[in-house]
Length: 128
Image 1: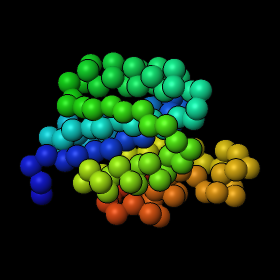
Image 2: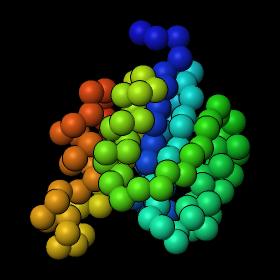
Image 3: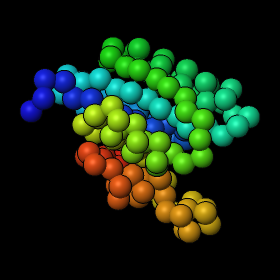
Image 4: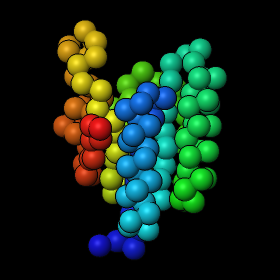
């Protein structure tokens, strides 16, 4: 096992992503790891992305975990998570599961399904 586990977690401000952040922090504490929090936003939503990251930073600081945050302009969260994990050699991706929330997710598949199907590292999908 590695000395330090590198964990990537995607957040969007939803309750599901907040639960994913809680699990990522738990894993980081249990395995002496660090957490990188990313949020993907569309044009005109940079302010919302910064709010999401600000909330995540507050939680991470309270828990005393080594962390990094980044907001990425884009439209495909699953691809951003997969690419970041591959390029930066993450050991684990943590995502929330929101189920079949919209017609678009039925056609395209949810972010969590796409990440599980395409990531090269382990993926933890947080359901509750």
